[in-house]
Length: 198
Image (tube, rainbow, N blue to C red):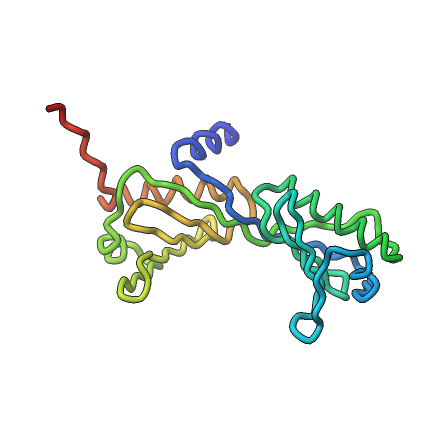
């Protein structure tokens, strides 16, 4: 039932995951100087305390810290996140560090885009929705914070929506459907007029 709802929400609102940030902690110290020698990485300790490893396929970046913590960013789905951590684990092992077989991967933030069915009256939204901020002279989008699920939205007059803060794709589908329902209830979604035949 939930799977069908998510599929419907994805089609109805054109939900696309743009970025996933995830972390893993290997629980061992990593000698970053030795790791860099395996190649294909950037390490400038005077500017940033970790190693930056950029991948082309999947297109992502991993930030590797001496504490054993790794941050993955740029993936568009969870299977790519797992692949990034597997590759990083292989490189760390190659550098001479013995890693535990099991490590926990935690999704910290998923950013997704969607499109609502019509243009948005941002002034009306700012007036009617609690937890919203709109300062058009500084930024053209309205920020709306939802409590359940706990996410933040950037709403644009065009109907484009950015949803950030979710830890799973299910919550994105639920949040976008809820924000759409709320905006319809307050009359803030302006439907495009059907084209008239000449």
